[in-house]
Length: 474
Image (cartoon, rainbow, N blue to C red):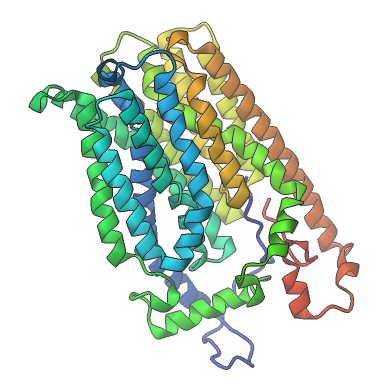
């Protein structure tokens, strides 16, 4: 379920033929021109953003693929040291999120995102030459430090170009990238694994080195390909830039004042119970996501007597199904402007999947359970911003300890905790969907109009989601 609260009233699209350039005149938009504009934005922005997040996620979780090719043995890891190495990344990842966004606004998106991408590419590549547990920990801490700013930075960057109604689908493409990264990681792990021994290096080293290099190259390209804002976008004509301005001003609550930072908005958000409810649901979902994404190779290897290469290959269909489910659900929910319904349905599918993994069944049935978890998990994946994103990502610290090596190959406790968490998050999102639907009904009946009596239009717009004209996307 999305936390993006849609301020735009539903209705037929405008069909005007021109944009008024006189600020005193009503702002009119050609529906066809706007549709073409959004398509152009998608062509120039989405592929870059998706590739950035794809390689970020790949460099973060490919340690799960590397584990199968002797990483623990070569570095002398024992006990929970592997889990600690996976977990420790999220400490600096979380700490860097807010400072990174502040720096992004100061140094411009193209420069900052280019810098952090190039940096994590170097770090991810050099992780492949580390010689000790201490070196691995240092690399993971640094990786989290520079990667932490990408997702929140990308989310903020997308708001420069897209309306809130359009934003959920575009942020959703980032989660599609995460699933694609899993499939790509399995495919690369399968192929690169055959390089075990080449140049006197183990397969896990080649996995980390080769998968880190594209991020370095992409980081350099981002400096030139990513526009900082609509005004500096080289691919937009002057008329399209005017249209971008109109689109921004058209949105309820998007006043000049709303574009600036206000401490009172932060304090109001921190006192809003709805945000904490969404944070709780996001924590449950993200715990399962990080546990599944990182440990799927380990889980599948425990299901049968497969070779390491076969295990890598068997992860690919699961991630592909996850990516497909997210694309389908994201488009359906975006078209219908419904989030909660799909979140609950696909959450239930994940619960069934973990139930199958826990059951005392055969190898084929357990592998089918992996598909159900992927289908439900990525179909359920939500858009998240701000505090919800931070709390959700904190689950990455806990998730690795759900699957300690001593509890393999069944990992019953890890699956049971994952089942409980995804069930909890589904209940939270179901309740919030019901509550916000009731809130919308009250506003449509005019039961909250007394709050804006004697207020000007600009004052009403400044109320944001507290305005009786604001409609939540549920």
